[in-house]
Image (cartoon, rainbow, N blue to C red):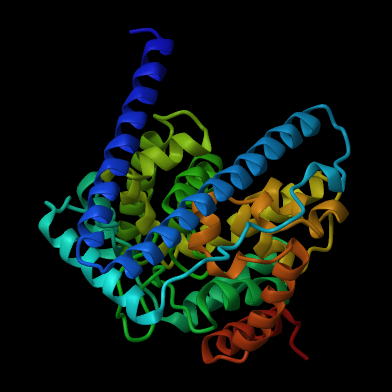
Length: 402
């Protein structure tokens, strides 16, 4: 089947789903209207008409955002400087009503809930958790991470960061924002690092909250260096048990690299592969005391290197985090004069914008300000204080003895 028929089929299927959804909503509205008196029916119809108009306004707004984004991409490819006019400069429209009274809204919500119970539920696919990462890693690669104490993990992370030219302030502030200041080496987004309560909301893991696709990308780029370092550690140890442990890690990492390089070196391909058992099984290396600190520090250093190649140096922790959150290229664009004053809708997908409450209703400059407020608060937490002390301990250990 050629590309065009596939696209046409996908479009027709999408249209069919929209029509079905519209028909279901109309049926639900009609059923609810039947429970209302004439005055209530009038109020409800006015509300639903206004909501439909608002939905069209939102669609038009986001269509403009997408159009401007494509135009900016073309300009960047031609090295044309971006201006304020290249961005949508207003925020998404807000619903202006008429609304429903609190009692009426609750009644409508209860009706919808009852209708939802009558529909067959689709089984939702749960996100993989740490236990899934560990099981897949052992199954596919024979890898079991060496777990070390938080204090020692922070020391190793600090040592690697300083060796790579990252500063204590940069790393600790990123940690403070990403983990709330109390993150653990095995913290997964959605799971409280101390109580371990909650459920995964993404694959983000560790002090820098790397996604499983990030881990695959870093393995492709730096896997040979990781293996070489493990081999050097193996050559310097005289402990037979430690030697066997390192031999197993080297063999497992080689298997992971082969698997990671079996797909094209492209972010979207890595995202797709990361959803498979073989893909997310690699994510367990973030938990390893030998590999995890290297991996995460190298990822942050990669953001700094990317910025330097674009002529941007001396990044703050907030600026590194902006690149970490939105992507390196997008983060740098948000820091430029035109990008700083633009609403964050210009830089995130529609879904991502509404999912991440922190970015909503802010310009890029205001988002950086929000980072600063959160970082200032979270660096006072116990985990961030311990991390900062780890950097001091590593520095002192390098000082010559008097």
